Amino acid sequence: MEIREMLYEGKAKRLYSTDDPDALYLKYKNSLTAFNAKKKAEMEGKGELNNMISSWIFKYLRSKGIDSHFIERIDELSQLVKPVTIVPLEVVVRNVTAGSICRRLGVEEGMKLPRPLVEFYYKEDELDDPLVIRDHAVLFGWATDEELDRMTEMALTVDSVLTELFSSIDIDLVDFKLEFGKDKEGNILLADEISPDTCRFWQKGTRQSLDKDRFRKDLGDVLGAYREIWRRLSEKKEDN
Ligand code: AMP
Image (cartoon, rainbow, N blue to C red; front, side, top):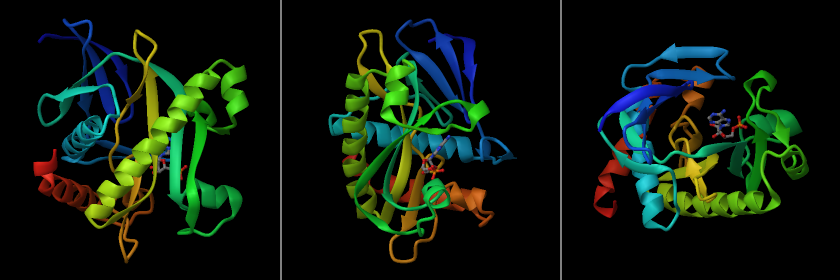
């Protein structure tokens, strides 16, 4: 396969076209950013861990019938993905209160919600990805009602599959962010990545953060936490 020009560079990944019109090459970077890139660092090994973790999770989700842009992992830092048009919404699912919801609503951190909460954020760095309601998304043309229903349904399925998976490796899945894209037939597929950059993972019992909060809050040993997630997932490898 021939890798051609770079189509897009994000905070954590670069996307390239290839000689196959149905495959793009996605290469993970070692950069770590938080607060809309106001805080930045380079961390040798982070790209590889996120590529391994995200590939593992997308494969696992595929085995449970949840489709994503993921085709296959190529090497330590890269994977092949299907071309999709990204829906400009971030879909956040919360099981336990943490992060922005605590700041926004003044609720205590660590409250188990009676059922999963699904929120939509408009993907616009200049506005710091604001929380929006369904009607904003529909009336401004970011997604149709049907697409929002489909994304909500898929997000809740991902939540129940991943909550069970992480629970089996002694981790509470507190919350996570998903992105979706549309393929050329108009099907909604999961896209982007699912990794410690995009999820909150708490060690059961102690609530120790094993995710990007270690970087956001200067808790130290960021890479050690990512490695620990990878170690526990890869020990389940026989399932995947
Ligand atoms: P927050 O709204 O900041 O509390 O984030 C909720 C969840 O979504 C956390 O697991 C975050 O890591 C994740 N998340 C929110 N926004 C982003 C983003 N722009 N990039 C990656 N993950 C995000």
